[in-house]
Image (cartoon, rainbow, N blue to C red; front, side, top):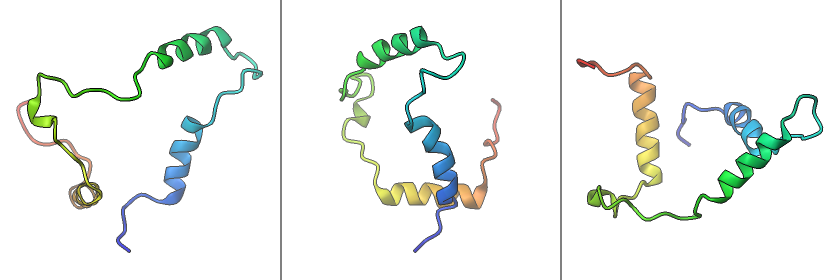
Length: 86
């Protein structure tokens, strides 16, 4: 098995707070804000159509191998920004 550079603990620490619902009974919880966010979230479609501005992306597919290759690239080269004028 190939190392990915991300531990199970890191994944857990990242996703648990994002995936678990908030507790409306906690002190200082803004229930109105939660309701507003729920309304906004319900307006997001379950699937979208690719933009007509970028037809080259219509058949674009990312494979597991693509993800592995990118992880390996980041492990090898780090997360430093690229060189350039900007």
